[in-house]
Image 1 (cartoon, rainbow, N blue to C red):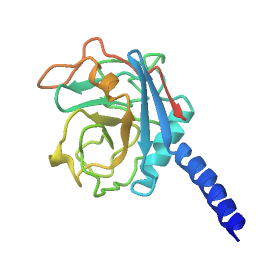
Image 2 (image 1 turned 90 degrees about the vertical axis):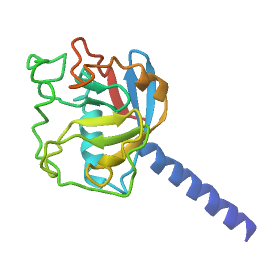
Image 3 (image 1 turned 120 degrees about the vertical axis):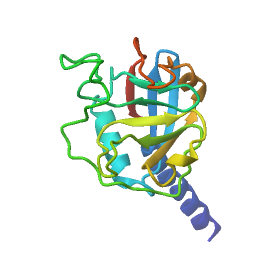
Length: 184
């Protein structure tokens, strides 16, 4: 009986570890690698979209077009913000998305604390598409207003190094970019 229990525990831990691995992402920046844990149980559609775009290479070369010191770093405009694309236009970065339809909001109980990933959107709650931001500090005014779907669990010091923009608009004249973003 003990052997069966140990076998069950071993199998469960292997399966559980494989499941956890599927929800880890590696964001490569000039400064170093950032590990992100995703929350599919909280925001399944946002996690699915994020992984789909990341694993297909859509985020590679995308700039951090809006970065406000003490608040957040925004990126993910795969249409106008991809510095590797002929459609790249820094003055339009932040106005585009992907060719996929917008997502319905998935507001959760996840607080917008340091390291949280959340979906960027326009004033309409169901307008998130490909853009996301990472919080530098707590931003409780965003709680239950934006779809938080993950958190930086390693390498937040590299996020802190991203070039900051204008203190009011966050516009970055010579922005840092995502080197690559993939499932771990």
